[in-house]
Length: 603
Image 1 (cartoon, one colour):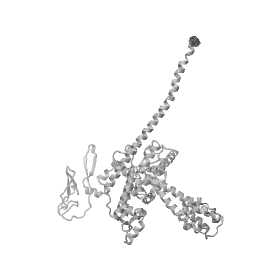
Image 2 (cartoon, rainbow, N blue to C red):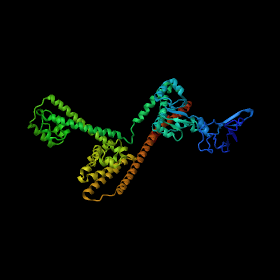
Image 3 (cartoon, helix red, strand yellow):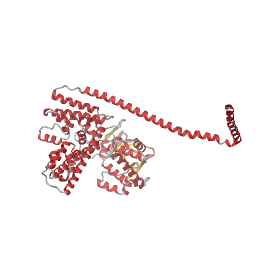
Image 4 (cartoon, rainbow, N blue to C red):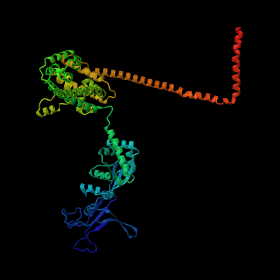
């Protein structure tokens, strides 16, 4: 129990009674005050006395609890009175016990990972411009930032993999291990500053992440003064690493997915549309230009390309020699060629000079070239659609299917669209106008050019367009997410649309979707088995061919080895020359004796 006297006990007077407060400190460190002042003369402490309104009096300074230590020293502790502590304006014990938070900065360079330590830096005391200006000065940066850890990539391939992972917001195993080795184990004592928020989300489970404007400014300073802060790298090495990683990363970004080559389809269909416009415009110019000389040809030949070819064959009307074969080849029909020959004799057109005809001929040749280019592009588009979206092409055609993919942006986007969006895709202006004016919304967009809607009755066009959009959505999803490219599902879906047309016009009940899909799955299974057999046969044939080649090559290798031992056996022959000479003499003697015996026998 401690006593805190408000007045000196020795100077006590009768007029002024003794005033003191007794403070009891319990084992649970709770403060209990009992004031011994008389009720009429409050002491001014925060406890309640007899008077409900104590006289105002300045609060006394808090006394500290003291413990006796030998040699007369005193060790002070925390203030006992919490109210007195608040009067002093001191910090609470929790805030005072907390250590300052350390900030680390992760910088991903082209050569490796760097971990920087942020030194004492008043972020709130300076504006953003002042922070940027201080980070521009190399002397100030060295006082603000210091290199804590550094790891270098193994090779260019490793650098590319790390860059791709960071761009995708994925924390690689190498990065996590690097941070675990160089960061403190206690997570409450530090924070890790990361520039990319996606990468920060991936690292947030294991490390305390900080992401803000101050972190971005500091990381900009790290990037600007990276050569000075990391002394292990020379400027030339860093430039080479940046150049190599930049080329590799850009090359990987520019490469197209071989399984989903929808970008060429989008470019091809755009070029086809432009070619159609140009061909029509140029062909009309050729017709108007050449019609002054041969006006009857416009009614006889209606096709623009055939008209351009005929104009190049006929040229000047008076100089034409009547080559029927060339005309037939140009217009494609003997009857049309005969009509042209008759019209040449009775033409009412004006004369034309050779110089004008040269320009017309040159312009007509350009129209023919554009038509040939369009034909080639159409074949290319058909082949691409068979690879990328075979079911969609089988259902609605390669041209309309390519337009749907181009308008959606990609096959994946088209597959994500609902059927209602696919139905009005391409009619956005009409849709927004209808919404604005509160009118009827459009029933179809790009799919209006399909033959199914053209064949349907006027009252059934909306129904068939909705049904066709549903099947197009299914076909695009099958093409986008299936592993094998087949046209089985597209053909079955096309049959369903045909049956729906028949049902709307004649009332014939179509098949159920479940039955149609089961048939399609059976056909796909058969195709897989056939492909597996073909692949197996091709592999066996290739293996047999390799064995035959190896068998044909091995004897050639053995022949020299077989001849070498014979030569080796013949090499020691010079030691036995006498024996060989004797054997040769015996053989010659025997050969000479045998004819004599034969002669005797004949005699």
